[in-house]
Amino acid sequence: MIIKMPAIWNFDELGKAVLTQWYVEEGNTIKEGGPLCQIMAAKVTVEVPSPSSGKIIKFIAKMNEEISPGDPLIEMQ
Image (cartoon, rainbow, N blue to C red; front, side, top):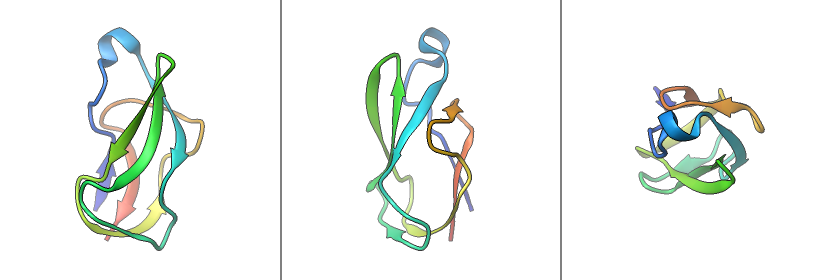
């Protein structure tokens, strides 16, 4: 399953965010609600929680890449 970036900031006002940190690695398992990654939007950092439990298969979004709500982040099993 593909996990997408949730709409956790006001995209219309702040524009795109930047992926600044992964809290997991490929092959790790994560529980629903656990910290997945960190983004920065308008100089504010926000922790993005995992929407479900599972194993991280691969990263789709890259570090320091601009992202918008709905963009794919990871593939999870």
